[in-house]
Length: 143
Image 1 (cartoon, one colour):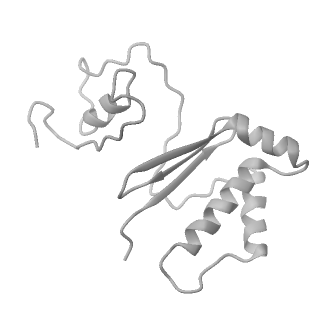
Image 2 (tube, rainbow, N blue to C red):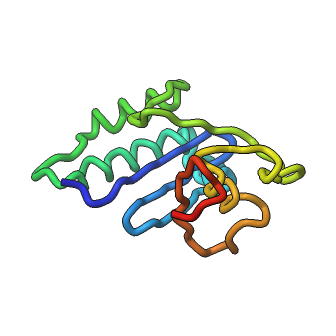
């Protein structure tokens, strides 16, 4: 049984984020870094290469003996991503742009994710610190 989950979320033009749970760890690869990789590897879609490498890592770390992706499977993932396909094992994923102006959720109830929104808002927890949000149907009570 897994003791941690790993999420890899990429959006062309924006970059790729890696999130590991238990312990919570977050990393990102910026669009600029991916573009530089593409420039040094003509004909390679950097996002597709990152996606295929990440999937290969996930398969090899699934706790099952001798599970890996072969080169044909890796190339298949790269071809899908390079062609614009959306590939996901998540039940849902939302990606969007946000602006800090008006980031005040005290006026509007955002249950049950108010705690998480405050943590990732412009006045949230200081950069570099990790925060585990709580879900609550009543933001005026503590768990």
